[in-house]
Amino acid sequence: MNTRVVTIDPDRIEPALIAEAAECLRGGGLVAFPTETVYGLGADALNESAFRAIFAAKGRPNDNPIILHISNTDALETLAAEVPEYAARLMRSFWPGPLTIVLKKRAGLPDYVTAGLDTVAVRMPSHPIALALIREAGRPVAAPSANRSGKPSPTRAEHVARDLSGKVDMIVDGGAAGIGLESTVVDATGGGGAPVVILRPGGVSREAIAAVVGAGNVAGAREEADRCCAAGAGSGDAAAADVGAGMSALTGPPADAPPISPGTKYRHYAP
Image (cartoon, rainbow, N blue to C red; front, side, top):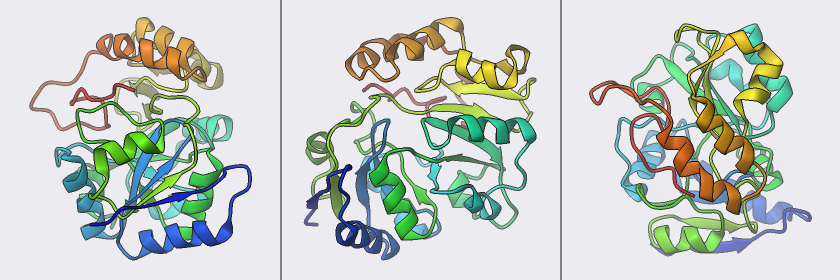
């Protein structure tokens, strides 16, 4: 496979180039693109062969759920069975941005999209290229980090090319990612003993989440993980230095338990 690299200035987005990348997605191709966290490897989430191609390109375990990226909250109607009030508050506060929210999935959403779970992980990125691409594609985009599983998460297009050139159809070079570590993932299904459970620390700190929903309504991540992510958010290299400590501060699920979120079973988040 020949991988085409397309350069797009996030401050002066060329509609024709976005349209080309979106057409590649709609046609079942794999497109790596920048988000405000790291580069993502995108595919049409509702195209099963394209979705499964992500796992082949990355060498990703099939039971590791993939976050779906949307460009507006209207898309939730096709993905989520319900949006609890506290989840809606988080969306209003942090979307677009580096927060992923796990919700009960809508009936009819294919099992392959959710790794057989009854939940779906969704976020709305704030990077202008990511938003423009998802909007133009007109469908939810599955997009884990654009690296081989087990390798450092990419923050530049050249990092993506080093890992995935020849394995993906297109790389959109939009410059450096801003934050340099993945999104925070929270469970908003109410199934973890608190309304909001932090499953993976990332670009939004526990303190910021607690300020929106109340400290008594947040559980799941240790203070050390939050300290690392809060210190790193927005600072790229500092985040890369601290995120490993943040990850090791989490207590993961049993080895035989199906992961509800990326980052809770397989240790591979290392910008």
